[in-house]
Length: 117
Image (cartoon, rainbow, N blue to C red; front, side, top):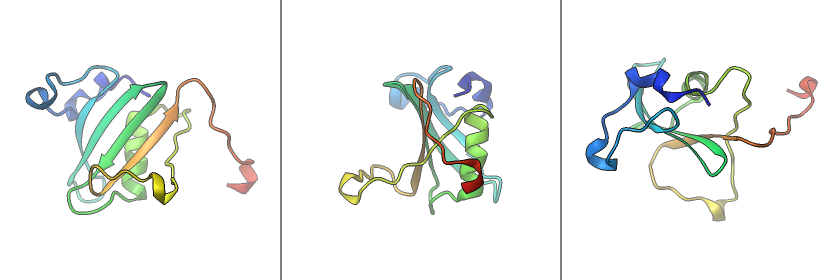
């Protein structure tokens, strides 16, 4: 994941909620959607050997264009990032209209052959 201080112009002031505003590894951000300029609300962290970015909107789930926009902002161009589709029994819905991007820090994500993609 990129150093998140590079995205400070999008950083939200959440000190009154979390006690601080984050650092180069984590924080809360409001990024305008490339589609309609409405805010994409972001929580980013790198904990437990995972980089994680959650992306939500007030009235709908973020779409592919918005998720790709966030991927490019928060992750380096050469990093493989994934969305996971877990079994229904493992779903935990804390925030409505939220999707997640994940990247393990210590292992490579296996990829299919390029001709399959």
